Amino acid sequence: MHEFKQFFIRLLIFCSPFLCFALGVLIVDPYNYTGVSRFITDASKKSGFNRDPALMPFGYTLWNMIQFRRQPSANVLIGDSRVATLNVDYLRKITGQQYYNFGIPGGDCRSICDTFWYVARYTELKRVYIGISFHTYNDWSNRKVFTAPRGILNNPLRYFTDRNVLKTACNILRGLTTPKPLPANRDQFRAKKGKELPPQSGADNDHKNETWSIVLQGLAGEYQRWQYPESTYAELKRISEYCRSKQISLVFVVFPTSIEQQSLIIQAGLADSFSRFKQDIAGLGAVYDFDYPNEITIHRENFVDPMHLTAPILERIMNEVWGSTQSNQPPLSVTSPPLAAVDSRSRRN
Image 1 (spheres, rainbow, N blue to C red):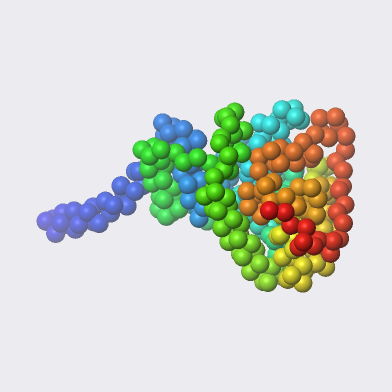
Image 2: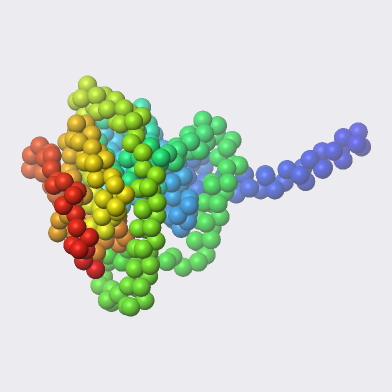
């Protein structure tokens, strides 16, 4: 009996850190999985994975999976970080329709397909808008962002032991005791707060230039590894056929990228592949294509980085795409000129 008691005490000591972690996750409930604790606001919880870029793909995926199955919507936005920045309140204002934003920063075409089939399980879809880009339409890019969140939903015990969940909980608690940083996008801050900010300083511009160069270097590497996504295209065709059979409106949005990013495609010898990408998407549904040399893409000031738009330009894109819904006009398929028209001399700083 004495030996058993000692064994039990040792076991309790050994397990106590894990029990403390599990209790902490239960109290914070960073992704509203258990629904037991609600003393922390959703905004504070979402900041837990917004504070760490490495957590964003996992965090946005798990958060959206949990929230959507509780409150499904017939109208859904799917895509990567560019979609995640779309303001559903503004969309409701110009369309009169409620949309759920399932955008996943760090997502790719594989996550687009996974997202579609996930939301289709929980609701009868009416309208699906998919943000897609050439650099993620890539067989090399397969980040499998759904794998870990799906595993947690299939096995609830993982929620209390997953390191990303624990890290999110720690970030939330840290955020409650430290000042919140300004959003990286100054225009978004201005739009949300209705305030004017002073002009960007030289240091701000230097930081943007540095970030710009880093992003372009990363994209150049991705284009060198680009492979035509046979399996992804087949899956997108299956989604397109499903939407046609269910009379679901399927619209693709190819967001603008800077002229410098477009030039990288030519430098990598992928101009024909880029054209094929556009042809593939045009055969799947209605398309709004903004990714070609135009008044938006030739001006660097329209971008936060080579692929992310400032808030005013993003609002302009939303008006272009969803404004037709307000007047009951059908979606328009926008055809872009060949990418060969891109000339690096057209760059504007």
